[in-house]
Amino acid sequence: MHSADDGAFEGIGAEIDPDAVVWVRGVDYVAGWREAREAAAELEAALKAAGVETDGGAVAQSRADGSGAVRLLWDVATVRAVARALVGRSE
Image (cartoon, rainbow, N blue to C red):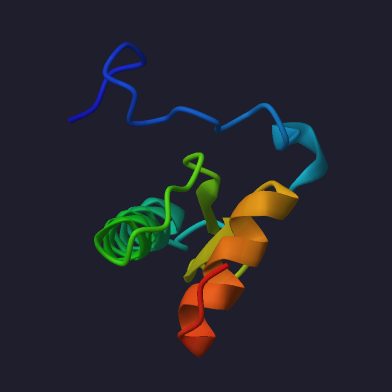
């Protein structure tokens, strides 16, 4: 179980208004969010291994159907560094 103090829910709520979302009974939003959180961590670890430092801007979310999604909130320099890493060139 996570608590508000362990950083597990960092970034949640700042960009989402819970009252603006329709919550469907029986949809496991937390499982999708957890999967997205793990995927975001994997992405950031892979980029770090490739020499690209991110600012932690891969944000886990749940979609309306409960599936996970990762939204990238990177600054322009990070996006360009990722693009260069993907095509195998450096500046």
